[in-house]
Length: 208
Picture 1 (tube, helix red, strand yellow):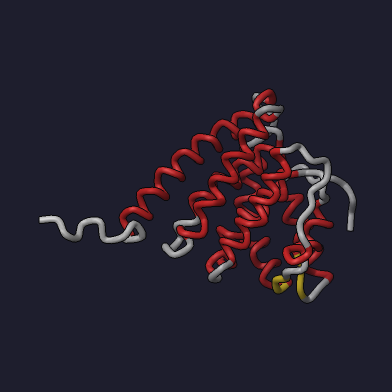
Picture 2 (cartoon, helix red, strand yellow; picture 1 turned 90 degrees about the horizontal axis):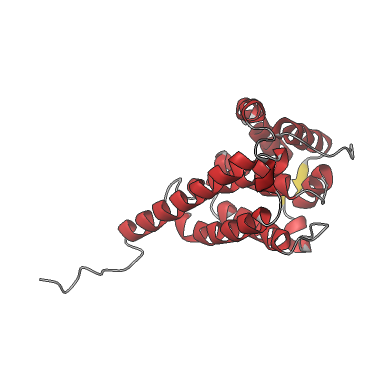
């Protein structure tokens, strides 16, 4: 596997396909080895993008992906040089064919993202902004487990997280600001969905 650092979404998808072509099952650790443990952008972006594909429709997968993202964000908050994930996460596997299909499905999106976002307003991807992003990401991850009970609802926080990951990957400060706006919108949307779905209990009973 090439040790060259990834700099675009297309680079990430190419790495995922390389891993999928060499194994029957791909572990989280395999993916981390492929993209490197020094860059937080890809490690935030990949799980968020995977959740948006059909793989994210498997029960429990959004919450598991949110756990990976949250652990990554905590380490980003403390500015760790190397990303670490516990063994029970690194050893989790997915079918290589499913991963390859997910990467292929994201091809068009990846090309558009690489074309649109690149190196604007770089001061907003330097500290303290990555720490601000880390706090927002952790909060977004906390919303995923309850939203998983609602069809496609967990996609909203994952889109915001994907925007943060992409901003860090391509060093685009404007996208970092957009991601912060998406985070606020996602939290408001999530609160509205949970409140209207009955998770808040039968607050209307007894009135009259």
